[in-house]
Amino acid sequence: MVELLMVRWSSSLLFLMIIAAALTVKGTAGFCSSAVSTHRSTTPRLHVNYANKKGMSEREEEKGDIIPSFQRRSLLLSTFTGAYCSFCFPPLSADAVIEVTQPSTTYLPRRNKFIDYVFAQQMATGMTDYEKEVEPYKTELFQRLFYSFGGESANGTYVPVIVEVGMGTFPNAKYYAQALSSSSMGLKGFDIVGVDPNNSMSSYAQDNARRFGLSSSLRTVNGVAEALPFADGSVDAIVTTLTLCSVVDQTKALLEIRRVLKPNSGKFLFWEHVLSEDDSTLALQQALLNPLQTFLADGCHLNRRTGMNINKVFDGKVDLNYMILEDKWVIGPTAFGIATA
Image (tube, rainbow, N blue to C red; front, top):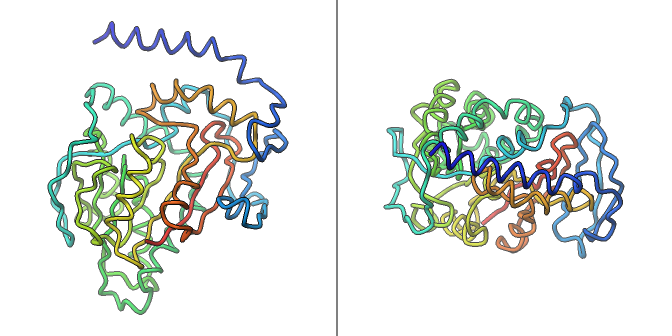
């Protein structure tokens, strides 16, 4: 095992040396169809509704000093802590509403326990700055999702079923707790099912659930995004945050998400790092670093146009936004929003 890891890391370092020059490439206009200045400011840039570029008007809104800035992460920190690229651990007790069917193992890859352990530890300890920076945006996004369940009209009796695909260490726990503490949401509780293939994520997810008073609301189940263990039209909402970068078949995963959502009312909340749409130099760097990122970060891809794929699968019924987290380098370009089944 030790020898194998040494070989993998030696190969990775050699690959880094070979492509190091690409990280300083300037002025590669034309690599992306929408190249802009490569200047990196200290505040995020928000581009609203970027997916349908040919048919939609675009606007860019400077967000000011809403979010604290952090220094750019190194390549290895980005590759290890830049994505929750995961799905699957054994079921645990909870106040269940939905029935979980027998999960398929068709897309479930073979796991290395040691690598899973290290990766889970990195996710649990290395994402603090990232989560702090995106918290204002994710807070608003989750509030919109929870209000869509009925708000005050729910009269505190509604228990929505929410599936977190690629739950990882459950960094979103705080947003569920905030909703339950708000009288205006009208929610009695949640039936949250976390789907993740990395067994080592389970204890971290349960720790976060306990920390925010959600122990009885959370179950974790073995499964993958491409074969979700739920009946057609049975789920109120699905959440993916830094997950779709690593699924084996993204189109299949999105079709599965739409399949299990309740028709006409089911919601899909997503927050995903994507290929840069407005910085050709950054997009080139993402493309060159993608093989290394995929190798080191549990299959995570830097070059996916996830927002556009979501827009296609959900027939345009998507509130789709695009933002640049300036200090997060290759995982800075972000697509986020809510789609309706």
